Length: 322
Image (cartoon, rainbow, N blue to C red):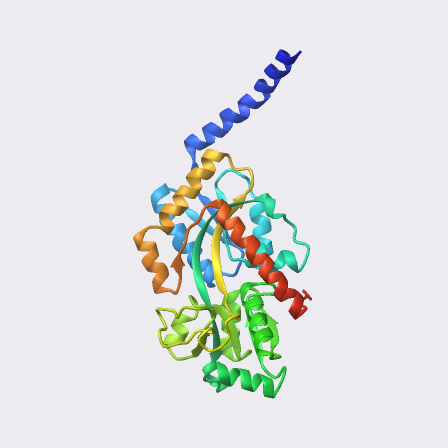
């Protein structure tokens, strides 16, 4: 009986093993889809396109960026989780839909439905104002906000995203009341700042650099310990007496669970080769990002730590989705 059971098991599993091996031998057999859970033109989109271009050149297959914006990034992550687990579908994602949104609402996916491939980049968050606001320093912003609570507003890439959590952390540490105006992605949030719909935002350095260079926007502080090499004269929040106001966006690559191990290794290796290439590192640095890679376990652990941190901010700020 045991022999028959074992033989039946081999008969059932054998074709699956053969299929996985065949997939590994032919991967990539078609263009890859790189999902971006945010609007085109934002920092996640820019980094994804850099990585996709480099991977396409080495793999000999196109890497097509698919923007799935909305719901704080959860629409795109859900699409990733439900994509075929064939190694041709993956996503570049910021922490929001992994660490923030699950603490705010019931998301349509579980983190165990995802493969955490590797970190891709780190970008410091910066506190920025429209020059027409008349605010020229972080001290002045805090004083103005305290003098007239809720008279100022700030934009974010959406409820539960890094800019939202980061600015709420800033408000908590400074005792200020500033109104939140969410948008569907970093690009429209920055557009709102440029048009004067809002006075300020906390956002990744990457999309801010050209507007800081042409004088439309003023960066008041880097939310961390280290000054940005692109803006050496801009102080950090730690220097300005706000040691707890530290926020950066860690971008990473995820994929649907269940990709055959050999295929997943090939996908991850292709991504690592792109991220670690001197050309891409230089491109990242020029735009405010720092290339960063990790093991799958390290990336998952980092997101768990971020989730714990964000949960505390969400609770203290009483953040809720409308």
